Length: 449
Ligand code: C2G
Figure 1 (tube, rainbow, N blue to C red):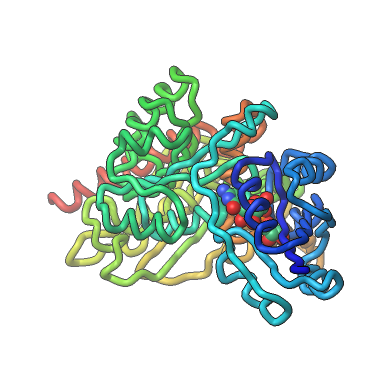
Figure 2: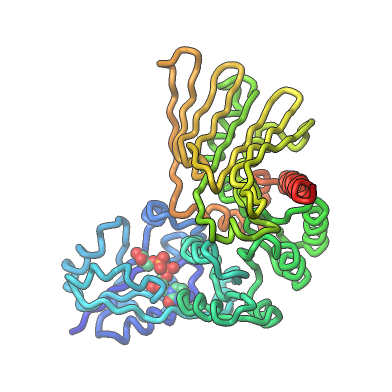
């Protein structure tokens, strides 16, 4: 008798799960299905699981393919199960290719092709829906989005669009999704889009996606003009759609904890926020060759402005920029933006050609908070006071690339919850667009003179 085992969360049970179990059963005579517990899904960073363990087990049983259902509750369990149940074949979907090769020491490992295009037939019966996401752009960040989205239950990345056919096909093959180089067809496959194209193209793509009735999650900086941000937010509101700027820090749990402590009075009244983010880039990179929208402030400014605007608000009295430029391209290699508020000062520092310590320091009338680098992936920070031995330490998990947090909040907003709206408000996104606009205007004036 050939014994097969497979594992999964099986949340919002759909055709992808059904087809996987069907083919898993066909691989042998006896199929064991391991269903993950909520706790295990939390440890492996899976978010938004909707159905209870009981419902998920019920759905696996209802498929009719499982001879036995077991519970998967810890990371090291698979090899133990394989030995305990004398398994011949371990199988899982091809979205996991390579990741379970280590199990071939114990049994045969088979990756079954992942199901593209989950229709909602099964889910409609359950009155539940999976948001089908399409990606615009095929660059580095787009590639990070797919594995992160996989860890958010309730979304499925289904398609990718890029006008350049070749890179689209390459990306689509890698991630087993549909490739499109015609926007109209792309929109037909999805209900929401993630925009990860070059900065200068965001405005037109957001507008077209909203006009096609799609919710939009756009990489930072969303747009580089205040009027464009205002126009797009109004358009989204008019159409009843979500438009969401993806600054991942704003959505990660550690940053929320940090803001809570900074505002709690523990360090008194906040008077200074200094945020620094530098990343050395090759002079040939897009960031240092895109003459119109490249440079350190357009690339990293959204991150370093975030804690300043979150803590002091949108209403600064004055802003000035100090910049070191590349003599040939005129692009900024290092920039400091100084924000002057009535009762506080914000300093946003970023660099692509100068390296510094990526810390965030929030100073107040009773003490200060230091967030360890990389503060934009907020995981550890300390609260200090006048007495140097009086230190409180805080830590929080930051999993993977951290995009899963914003994807999860984007999904909740699409599903009608506004509980995460405060994490990055429309007003804050508009302010950031206006700061970037001022920065780029001054840069153009410098180039002209
Ligand atoms: N699957 C699929 N096609 C889809 C979606 C999922 O073939 N469109 C497969 C997955 O590859 C997996 C199974 O269905 O084999 C269950 O998927 P999930 O519930 O998402 O579980 P997953 O997070 O993939 O967990 O220990 C758990 C395992 O590692 C798999």
